[in-house]
Structures are given as C-alpha cells and as structure tokens.
Amino acid sequence: MSETMPFDPKEEALYSICLLAAFADGGKADAEREELKRIGETLLPPDFNAAGIYQKVLLKRTTTAA
Image (cartoon, rainbow, N blue to C red; front, side):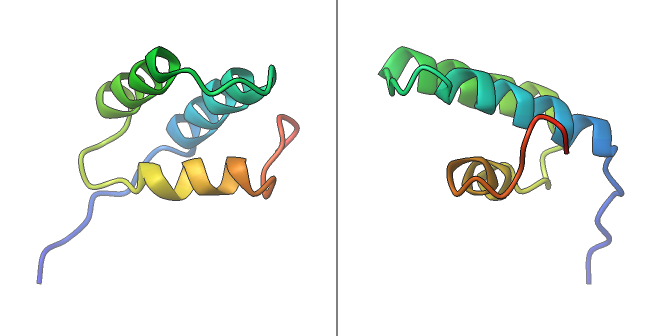
C-alpha cells in the first residue's frame, strides 16, 4: 500500500481561485482549459486530485471565501 503525501491546503485554495477566476466570465475557451491544466500540473502534487477541485468549482461547492 502506497502512502500519500499530505498536501498543503493553500495549494487547493490557490488552484480553486484560479478556476473560479477562469469561469467567472462564463467562457470555456480551449486555451484557458490548457492553461488551467498546466497550472494544476505544476502547482499541485502529482498524487493530488485536481479533477476533484475542478468538480467542486463547477458544481459551486466552493467559493472565494472558502
């Protein structure tokens, strides 16, 4: 069984803010998606669930205040 490294909640918060800002205009440009993917890959640890953060933002389960 592999151990997962604990992540810094600041990483999740920062990526959430990036996503919230990107989606604020209602647009879904391919270039924007690619940049968000790049940010997630460089900002978050490899074993972190970036898709889970993406889903929380899309489903409005997180806010800038959170």
